[in-house]
Image (cartoon, rainbow, N blue to C red; front, top):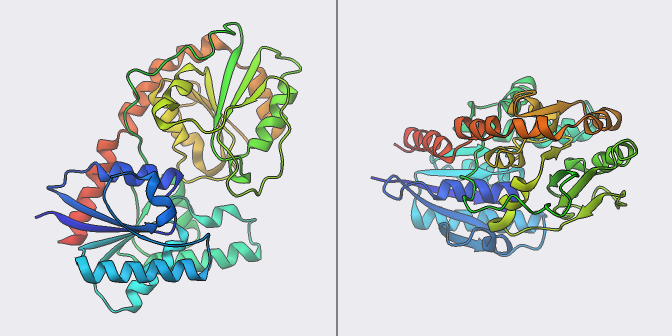
Length: 358
């Protein structure tokens, strides 16, 4: 008999949407899945599973109350075996489930611990640490999307059964192009993919790129994405950099495959999907050492890491060599196949569902 899993989300965009889409591909004979999520986010998931939406304008107490009420209705109606809570604000739903007295198995995934965003030992960090460290422990299992997240949870003494199920991404598009930059064959083309928010470090990349261009006028930077949180201020483009905007998922592999390298200058992450998405296309990754991201690549084989500092990144960009990067492409593809395939993620989650839901 299939395990019934109800996913509860306060947000279902970006990486969370990708994660849920991968889980939705699990065999219906093994797992039956439904979602509770904001109405405005349902369109991002398409027909992936039965969705029960609630109306919410932004974040706030009323949005959380509507999420909890929608969750309660669906639990009473469908009687799931497992309730899976996603991201920080969904902890309100987890707390409500436990307060209701219903003895239903629960899983929590932060998709990157919120505590990593704040200055060490500051008041905000202490508050966030207390909330997510204690409430997360109400779940029967806490899924960390990376070893770095697990280490962070242990370092802060977070409660609960902490396990790791690394993020994954689907197979690359076999028809993807690799010639988007054919008009400038002598240039070295770099790609940034992500939100233009403080977390993603685009401001640091632009500063480093402007400095590197003084020695390397052949460098080009293609910037894919848009601002979401508006917490990083405005950006001025240095010469050689171009805003691409958001790209349709069906065409994103064209950009990855055409680039010589992908740059990930994040200040904090869980496991950024940009890295396995680049690797699946054979594109080397240049990433910061923050949040354990260096462990996601093989130094000098599938990419390169740098301390999160403008001068350090400038030195890396200045020293890039196209032949060296091109030689990394087979190893990058092999790294995705060995570590980041969706079948591995799905098998691990199925095992957890069956254990908790039996």
